[in-house]
Image (tube, rainbow, N blue to C red; front, side, top):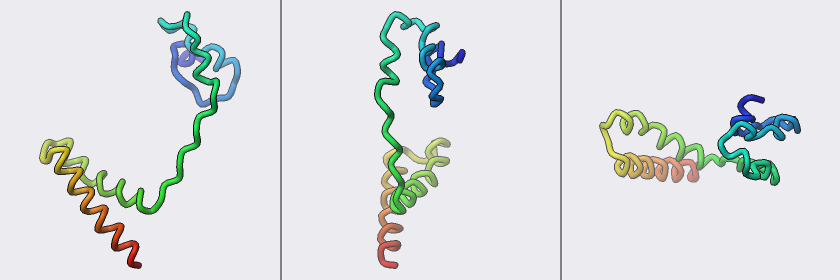
Length: 92
């Protein structure tokens, strides 16, 4: 409830918690209840290719964070690795 009053979105469907949204925020005079007017879209399912590409970029994050590589190089290497893995998976 306290988080909702400060302006934090909740996944709970309790109408009291949603009604309290933003009461203690600097923007309390705005129509903040409109945040819950529409339903959020469902998360799209991941395909096998999505998983392959995600693994390729995740493998590069440590080098990127440590400064051993730049973002362009990491993205290029990940794209090349993902492309090869997707091609290999398609041939199976």
